Amino acid sequence: MTYQRKWPIVLLATTISSFTTPFMGSSVNVALPAIGRDFSMDALSLSWVASSFLLAAAIMLVPLGRLADLFGRRIFFLSGSLIFSLSSLLSIWPETESLFIALRVVQGIGAAMVFSTGTALLVSAYPAGERGKMLGINIAAVYTGLTAGPFIGGLLTQHLGWQAIFIVNAALGLAAAVLAVRLEKEALPAAAGESFDLGGSFLYATALFALMYGFSRLPSLSGAVLIAGGGVCFMVFIRGQLKKRSGLINLHLFMGNRVFAFSNLAALIHYCATFAITFLLSLYLQHVKGLSPSQAGFVLVIEPLLQAVFSPLAGRLSDRYEPRIISSIGMSITVVGLAGLIFIASDTPLYGIVCCLALLGIGFALFSSPNVNAVMSSVEDRFYGLASATQATMRMVGQMLSMGIAMLVFAWIIGNHGIDHENGALLMVSAKSIFAILAAICTAGVFASLARGRIHKA
Image (cartoon, rainbow, N blue to C red; front, side, top):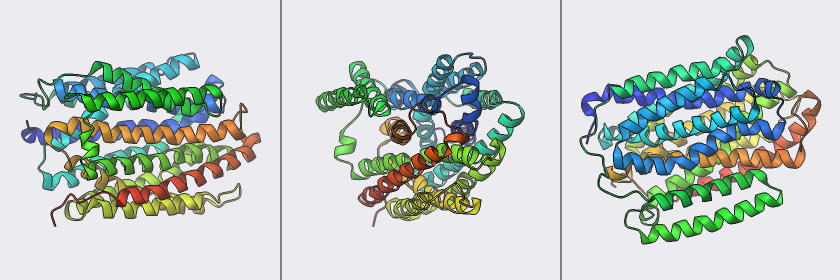
């Protein structure tokens, strides 16, 4: 199965979708103070605007990726784009906090259908020697979305209201769907004829939900109970998968494939160490430094701008040199950027924040493209959908854990107080504590990145 005759459409469709979801996330981060005011949210409720999307996407990624391998990646990519577009449009009308967060959950499910198939569609269209380059272009689109999100999101929020962000995302999702219609249908899905593990999917979703939601509920007793229950469900799930021939996840990819296992672990750690940065700095710049949404967006654009510039280069380098070397250098640079943020204060000059963001942008670019190339190059064609879904799951779970760490520290230090200028001192203490935790996590990730094997022949 190949899409080489339609490769420009494959590249364009997956690039638009790769741009759209990070654009949504980064633009919504800038709009969080405005959304919080409209719905009268406290600190913990506001964090769920971002976390609900991530939780839904993380839970659904692997089951949907497996279904896409069984029944066709094109139809899942198309359906996901339409669901994302429609839920984005409906998000401008809710009058209650609960309905708004529910629509964010639906957005996450649509995004999961896109995430679990987009990379697989792209990799299927190109030979191994060109994948790093194409993935570099695709990942550059991710960072272009992250670049445009804070700036455009800030302008839209300030002049048209936060609802305009969701209208723009609805249009982008629709554009990806229109292109997906023009993709060639697969002659035969890569895993056609194999069975779908419904029971395993349910157990997997239950375990992941309990673990991630329980983490966000800490330090309460209910959070500890949920985590314990999720851990038990996950162990039962793993035991069941080892006994099945066509389970939800081929655990032998992790047990017998060193590159696949450690590349995914490195991705999990790196996203856990970096996702909360934009969330925290958006609040810091607006509530402590007193910047407007558009001004805050202009500062935050530095990190993803450099990610977009350096990602294609990093992807091309990973076609020639070992991804573990390039990715590990990138993660080390990320550690330095995080360490710098530990020392921010209310009087820290903006150029100091910009320097840290620049280091984070370069580090992330050097890590991401080579790491995705390593994941996708380490498996056979019939596992592309699962591999794509797995690395996207690592991204989503890592992002959710990052937000979970932020929510836990907020609950411990800020409690039920609102996040505003009057509580700026509490916000500063929380942010510095979170940055210190994230820097320590990222340091451990460097060793996981170095531990993977080779993908190029000696």
